[in-house]
Image 1 (tube, rainbow, N blue to C red):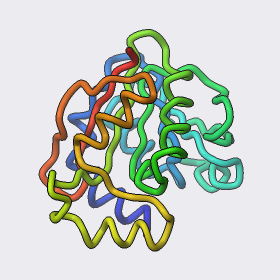
Image 2 (image 1 turned 135 degrees about the horizontal axis):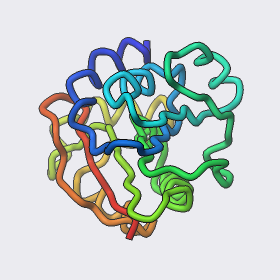
Image 3 (image 1 turned 90 degrees about the vertical axis):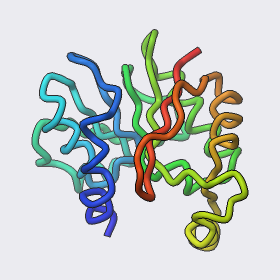
Image 4 (image 1 turned 30 degrees about the vertical axis):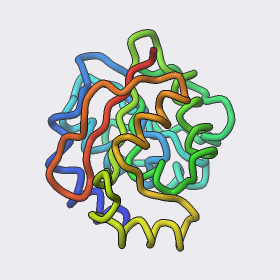
Length: 179
């Protein structure tokens, strides 16, 4: 199911991701590696690393141009990256665990690094996307967030919002800088 979502929702966004030549890109919590493989195919000179639990990363073995590293994202990360991508990861968590994930990403970033969040961005009154938000709450205990809530969360992690969401579908791109 998640692979299907990735192919459908992320495909139109991948080419516009803020990834530069030669960068190390960590797909944090990237599951079976579908998005990581899409990033590797689009940014052929980037080093793409799938960072997820060892048992999950093992499923991704064999993805083209992707290296899998087994890791607990709530512990110090075993890599340094220029870009950390969280695709539909932060919404699985309430603010405190999401903050731990963002702080882990920040610690793993090289100078000038970025965190790229691909997730639903709710409207200011939370009405648009409310059903998805309720679903996430019921299934994972997490929550979808408004742009202001993302801005507050990334600031608490020592990051700063660089640009507003990009993308016209359910999933949008929010970029934060190490700052």
